[in-house]
Length: 316
Image 1 (cartoon, rainbow, N blue to C red):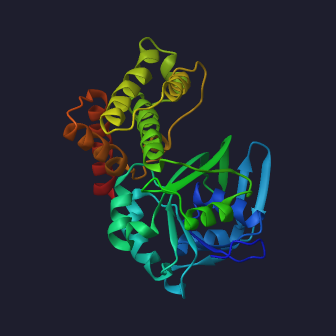
Image 2 (cartoon, one colour; image 1 turned 60 degrees about the vertical axis):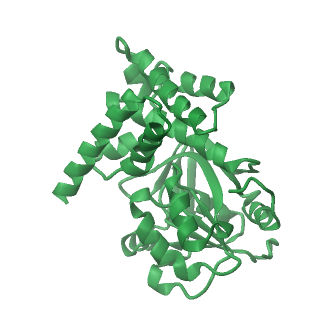
């Protein structure tokens, strides 16, 4: 793959929502050859308004190159897969014509189950592990709103080995307005992100509020650390103990007085949208059972999210 700065190195971003849209816009601004694979409704919104990023004083507008699944005509060098887990199966079918012999797929999804699905369809040699950290959401106008300054992408071979194609992908995605790194053990990094995501998701969904609202009431300050202890125990039992420094940082986040932080899972629940409950929570607690780790708080959060999902499904 030619990753020189003359426009070579074709990137296909599957999804142009809060995450894919943000990283894709930064890559476009950096001069990369970027195409967004979107559904017809999203294509109509972006075609009319452009891809806009707001928040934290930013006012970015780009005119993205858009295609729908029926318009794919050949393979891309790198595919950044940024969809909800509930849309993964359809996204795999849609993107298949864009996967060639030299294509590298980098998923942005949380959890681990998506790797199994991607490996089964395209082969592990085509799929890198990926971890993204960004706080964004999509508003009612379809614009991406930044909620915090962090923006980081970490990639790595599932095997933990370095490779020429890994470094090619790293070069293509680097120096594009967000932090990029290569992990020596991307699977462990994904587990640590999963432990964080499930902690803040369970906290805000169970207590139905922001971190600041939760810690302001009697007993609230202890809930986050208790959930984190369960998540960390599962990660450790799976062979990926969360370092003390990361545990301290998460603990500080989930006990911060006055914090307006909420999880994307909670925002989906409040908005009456489907959630990634099975992919993020169901799979996690299933692994906990297989590892003989008790997770009563995470089990309760999973049950609550399943009730929400059933209600949404019945109403649709």
